[in-house]
Image 1: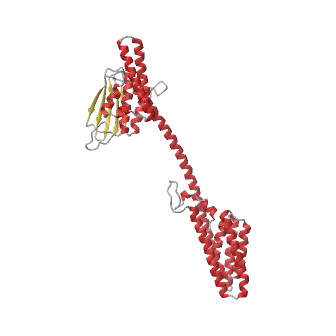
Image 2: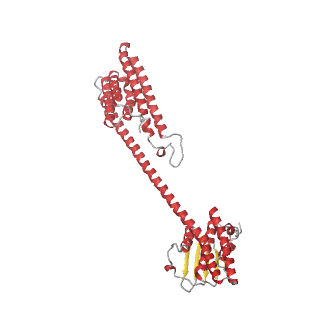
Image 3: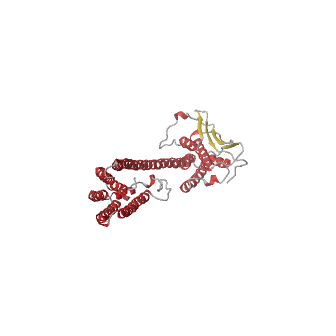
Length: 418
């Protein structure tokens, strides 16, 4: 906006798009656009006052007291009208009557006393900021014409530069003002579009976050509560069929232990979605413990030099072992199951192998109310951490669940309970 922009117009410029204001990212600077434009308006009004006084002194020094009465009266009237228009502009658009009355009085003054022509610059901007459309152009044009007439009269009608100069300056100021006003409006429009896009992006991120959280919780529940309950149900059904034989008592005891562990897992999910009992031991021991919750005879092999791994990688490995071991218990009918943990320089690998019935991974049923979430949940856990997950199996040939997760080694590190 030009120097004479009103406070109301200046206030409409968003702070977040103007230098020196408070940005959309929360950063702040010394002044807001409204304050900046207000200070420019004050400078314009102050300049008008200084030029008016200087022009008045110049006129009084060069003319007789008899000539001063009319000019002083016109100058006082113009000053009061200018003040009224400035105040009304700061509160909203003043009526065109006020502005054109000011222009009319000013035209008489500047023609009668061309010494006041310098004040026309401030008057031009006040006319443009106080009015809009054709009325603004008419008021500014009348100001330029009156100034040109006054200066041409001062040259006794001999200097065309005095006539054409104010008209040319008025035209240039009009073009500059229009361009600045257009740029300000474009800036406001772009800011509105950016604000809308930011709002839509924030809403999209919230929806994505909600979906991701649902997926995460569903994996936690599947790998802990659902798997444990399914295994406990099988054990209880087997105990019911064999009751009261010793094997039934053994199945009942194992089911009870699983349910107790399930209760502990559920409480952990409610509080931290973690497994304190598993997290308190070294990773190899925690993986073996997780596997033997479902496959009591599971074995563990460790390759490479054990070292600490990031908590999220550790958590993913535990859940993969739990889910894979539960699948072995529920579906494989395996005689043996082996968990292999490998430490590579920049990664950690996990293989869960069983010699059970096997299956065709390509023909696996999609997730449903009856189950089928295990493989998908394991894959999501691994891939979300930048790892690679695979399943190798065939009917009658057992199954290998494999995962590799990035875990760069730290020099001299060793895995420990902490």
